[in-house]
Image (cartoon, rainbow, N blue to C red; front, top):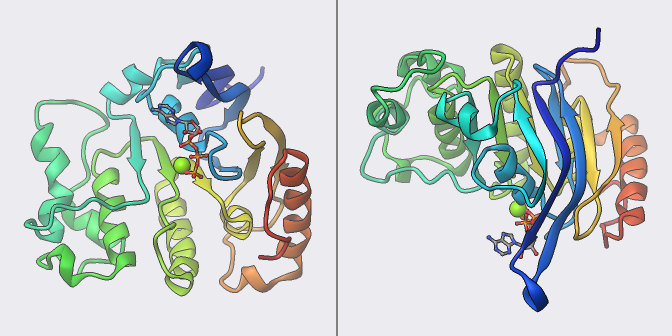
Length: 265
Ligand SMILES: Nc1ncnc2c1ncn2[C@@H]1O[C@H](COP(=O)(O)OP(=O)(O)OP(=O)(O)O)[C@@H](O)[C@H]1O
Ligand SMILES: [Mg+2]
């Protein structure tokens, strides 16, 4: 019997506006994500990656096609707190400490069910911030702020994590370190992750599979399986294997009409 996927995206198209103003962002996208899988969506700017993630997260309707999360409509999965979203901007409340930022969604949604929430102390340990519960966001580095945002999202113990370029605003060195930190957290929590990125190397380091989208309207040009052992070791970005996958992904991006940077960058 075929395994039921966690996320099923079937023939999804999205057009914004109508008539002369109509803009098709996604065209007939079909994708499955298995339970516990780390899948990245790689594509040029404006190809519809965030739109696709919003549709999966139940924040936006499709024009055609359908999405199910564990067999349910995304809105239903979202209402059950089965889906967590992490954005590029950590958007922490500056007047709340680290611990109080993490507690916020639980306080706001006290009456709601879900998988049961994880205590803030455990979340702080998970993201490596156990020494900083009383810090305010302005006292944290960008990487630390993004860890708080991740902890806040994990508070509800969602089974599916949707991440839209969560490392995009970090400097290159912090970003490289955060990739492995993210992998450690993913391995510890066994979530399903759909991760949006522009970075070829990042997609290879993190993912089990990478779906490459064409330039707008976003179509799936190819899905690449990353056959590298786990846990993935730091320094992978400088390895031969990365270069091999980068060339393949770069070729797919070009085939999809992207003006991608040369492989290896
Ligand atoms: N709410 C909206 N209304 C109208 N057009 C939209 C809306 N959201 C996105 N678009 C358009 O859809 C296209 C895809 O946008 P989207 O944000 O999904 O791209 P992206 O792949 O995430 O880009 P980037 O990598 O720059 O974040 C763009 O042309 C954008 O202008
Ligand atoms: Mg985007």
